[in-house]
Length: 393
Image (tube, rainbow, N blue to C red; front, top):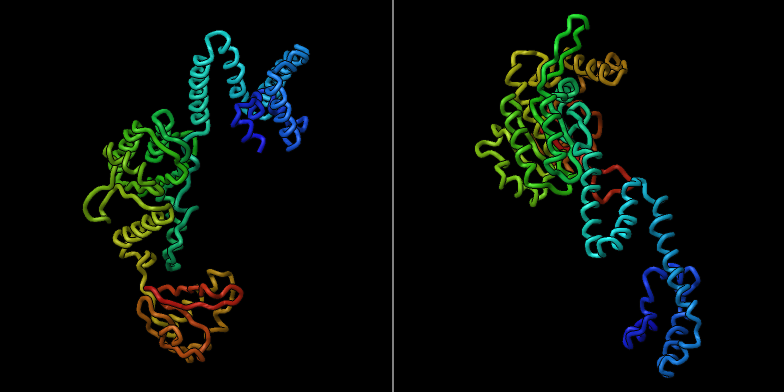
């Protein structure tokens, strides 16, 4: 409360000086008693018309100035040297203090702002705008797919290239994105003296993720338009994810915006997050391969029997053994006469308690001939396994 009272009468105990505040707190002035004592002392001086101040040696006031100077040097120059990793940032304070005596305080502040801007830009250039590069082989969507589709994506997922961006984008660092995209479509140079390395396929989809981007300058729109042109010239689609509305509006004003027309034919599209963008790229890639390789028996669009034939059931068991590295096919083949075929529509559940066709008492082993079964965990169950089984083609 002494601070409020001192502020009401215009007393210096509110903020004596910034330079000696840390020293006073080190001596214990941060407690309540020194504040009340300073208020009492100032009231005494005020009532005596400050005649008592004449009895205080001048050396006390000059000592306070020296203590303030030493405290500022220790706090802002010596201690800050050990706290700052980039030493070029430390030099700002000495430069501002020196320029304050040479060119004035206001000019020194503007000079410090200019130096801080250059240091900030240099730090952005060092850290780079690309956080990391990845592909569909490493980052996969959470969409549930058939085993055939998963195996195909495991082998050809590098046709999806992912560039995760970071920091503030401006023309000085955004040009590095263009170099990354250009290198993806460069062919390998032949050298007769060296063995030929396996060729890297050109990407069919490039995903730019903006989730870690803090902002961008309007000049970066030209860089994104150049990336769009490169992708269109190489039969590649450009997907963008994680763009906030403000950044998306800036890009749209510069001409970088989603194309109109049928979504499946658009070369530039925007998505809310990276998982959605990767999932859509996988979907389109699988559809494209089914069209291009529909005559291949090992393509994505393989038809699966309903296990009515014993040979088909054995082939399915062999595939399970091969996938999990086990040898149970011969032992499970004898249960074929006891199999019952169940046909489900998309979105239907298995058991009758959830609207399915199988009685709750008929629990057993289910072999999936075609399609995908999804297990949905019940939100009310935390320690027990309880959920629903739904079908999707």
